[in-house]
Length: 80
Ligand SMILES: [Zn+2]
Image (cartoon, rainbow, N blue to C red; front, side, top):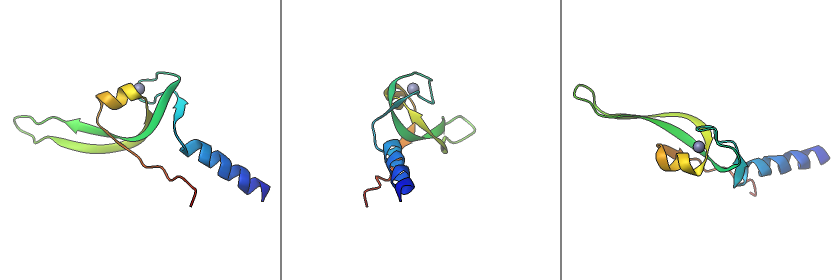
């Protein structure tokens, strides 16, 4: 019982924002981070259409979120 409560607590700490840490994109430290899915964007060229490919999930700082294509991930809150 006690162990379950502890696990639930750390799970909630991990997923409830804001999270402060090291940005996984630029490596900046002590930044408020948001869990995002990175997208790789290939610009349109004369012989290929542009495309957007989803990549893995990372924790990003504000600066990276303003500069690079991504999608925020809705974390489960765990109160239900
Ligand atoms: Zn960053």
